[in-house]
Image (cartoon, rainbow, N blue to C red):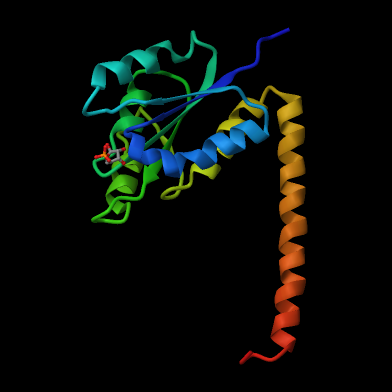
Length: 171
Ligand code: RP5
């Protein structure tokens, strides 16, 4: 049997961890093996190159890279691997993540980064799981279950909001 692929989660700073926790929570929920590390495109560029180059032989199937501000981490990782790289723009103090978003998403032709919305660590994990699920039936089944749970949740919410809309609007 083929060995299961893992997900590598890197972030530019320990200050990104509160944002990235949600990705780890989701990967755990789906039983996807992962490794988490702080690697900075600007402060430790050699370490980023090294971990990205070793990612495929180290049995990773996707990389999640989160950074804020002049967010070059996902791009630098993508430049050093042919694995799919998912960028998470972390919300920044001065520009509320718009800088992170643009510097993560605006990659040059030839080196793509799949960028999720600002601070969307959970979606990054789901996308990584979807990538692994291309060749993993168990994961694909779990993703289907997750979608069904969302449908049930939205329908529950809809009934609740419809009830509220029929009630006292000033209460
Ligand atoms: C980026 O700058 C990090 O990804 C983080 O989002 C931001 C601030 O980093 P710290 O100054 O908190 O280490 O490199």
